Image 1 (spheres, rainbow, N blue to C red):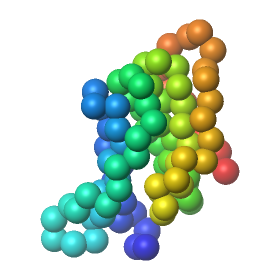
Image 2: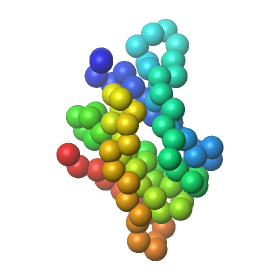
Image 3: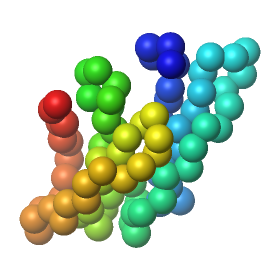
Image 4: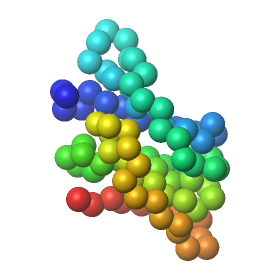
Length: 88
């Protein structure tokens, strides 16, 4: 894949969408499901090998953006997540 050629979007529909940006218009590449509440934050690792999403329901999921596979799921403590960072 071309570096920087994938965009991730998410929101109230509780899904993460990966978009392929290599063509003249964005193309939906994958739909990642597993959240049960509004998704509030997304972040790729600096090398682009992992993506994390965090929802209002305090669930965080780590994804493999190349395959769309769910790698890890965490139930976060009883506190609202305002921001987060993912390391490799």
